[in-house]
Image 1 (tube, each protein chain N blue to C red):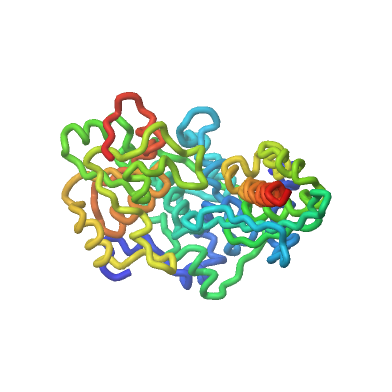
Image 2 (cartoon, chains in turn red, purple; image 1 turned 120 degrees about the horizontal axis):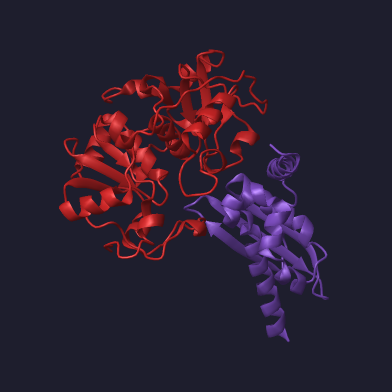
Length: 282
Length: 133
């Protein structure tokens, strides 16, 4: 973790193993494979399913402030709880859940990601359990949503027109070029048109992760993003198709590389690619 | 979790952790591959069909998410005894209901990967037999 701007945002699997019974810590598992938690999870971890727990029930948005407070309270997460996120697929959905906690103002010093996620935990032969965690309900008071971490379509359009911000498309190259309208197994997350937001640079999110699921080194990450002209001085907006892969990139840029102004455009391509009159490049 | 949802989840986990008819079928009348390695879900379905056009054995191989692999396992039990036409008539939406719509709907393509692949295998057998006259 040497060289990261905020190394304290990552914890090792060793650290997690040593804090399994720490009452001030709550492990949160968020996976792309939605039933993986039930197959087995780190002892004491609670599940946060991005699809069923974090979504507004009616409109396309996240759970509202009251809903977020209820979610945290039910899982024994208080305002002083150190929340450690982990999951499958290089911690892809884990960083999305962390992003939402950050959005609702959870103390950043109490947000962590277990580097390497499930993959590293398993590779090290560490045990899972199917036991439901026993935790008393907590009281949680969320802050109002923080707009400094979230971009909406009008800001993205303004950035396209002004050229004043870095825009990163973190999807696969085939999605970037418009060859694919959606990832193969996600037809419900497609769009009317293929391509990318004009001026967006293609830097697939998975290039920030090692084969073992851990984040690449600071030097490697700097080379990856600065090599494509994404420098820390400006404002950056990352997007994918629904904002989950781009939350991984948001985490990398904001916490590991210390870029101060980074937003996740969660509307992403499912919005932009179906938006009437939105400019598109191929 | 509602009782129904819990039951669906338990059934899926059972099939994921103790898959039925997993492995290569040899000899097989047809083999079809489905899925996308890039997304991590792959299923290969094997079919054995009698002279009357009824499925006598089915197996699958695969890797991937709990829902895709459990779905393939569930399917093997359902397919044995069916005619090839009945396999082709198996409905994706009904299969999603069988697995538990509330549980799998966000991963509908994963849930039906095995069924789509099985239909492809059935189609291969039907074409072979038509060609053979």
